[in-house]
Amino acid sequence: RLFGSATSDGVVQVSLSAQQLPNSDALSLSDPFCVVCELSATGALVEVCRTETVWNDLNPRWVTAFDVATDSKRAPDAVLRVDVYDRDAKSEALTKQDYLGGVTFQLEDLLR
Image (tube, rainbow, N blue to C red; front, top):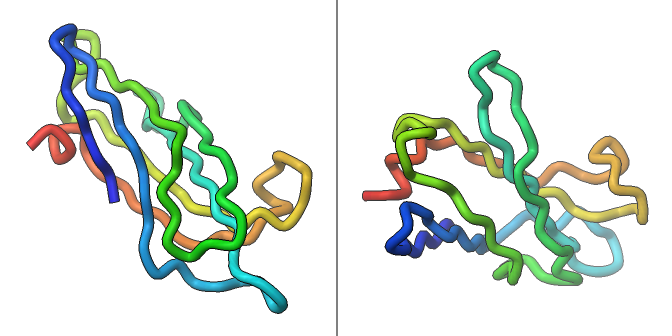
């Protein structure tokens, strides 16, 4: 779930939460965190934010928020991707974590 809060200076602050995430841990609940990326003009995904890990929770609400400029530098059809992982290692490498799911959307969908 995405929560957008517009400001007067052309910036939207986005907060994230999730519900009913799959449990990928055997002896406890998943330890989810999010990675937010923007699709660049070249088609590559560029990481813009990574949330904190919420330990032992399948319905997390992350404290870390990120700002998205909505001025003329960024088209409203800009594409964002949010992926959720279960932290299984101290490493920040995503290949060391379990993938729980994700969503791709256009910035204008958040602004409606």
